[in-house]
Image (cartoon, rainbow, N blue to C red; front, side, top):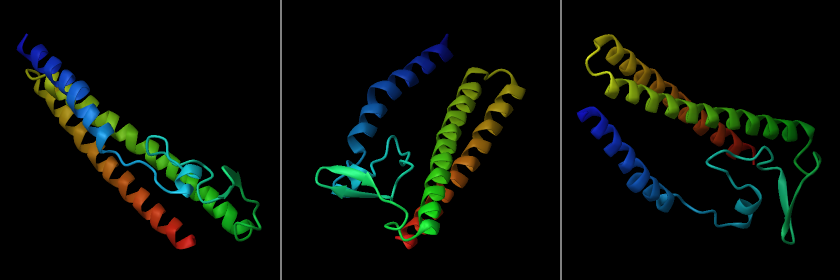
Length: 145
């Protein structure tokens, strides 16, 4: 019964306090380019870096305007890879939450506690790799522009 109370209190804290704090703390796009290349929950659009602002609408440039077919395909491939890596990061966060749930709810079973601990450890390693990959991709993308 005590574990259920702690679990319920954690859930209420996450929904009532931590969630609204993250919404307030997240930055909003400011420039006109951000309107064309805005992100949805951190996931970039597949056309990031391949748009131009015409009046109030954004259009995707043709390969010659993007610096050639090779540059166009490179930017497109980098965007698709980054989408996959960001989604992998969200999956890692899901596994951290899953491992924490297993760790907290099976306090009397040592094998399940170890399973939860290992799940959290592996997910944190995966999250670190995903964050590093996003950083490297953004660096490469910045060098191409």
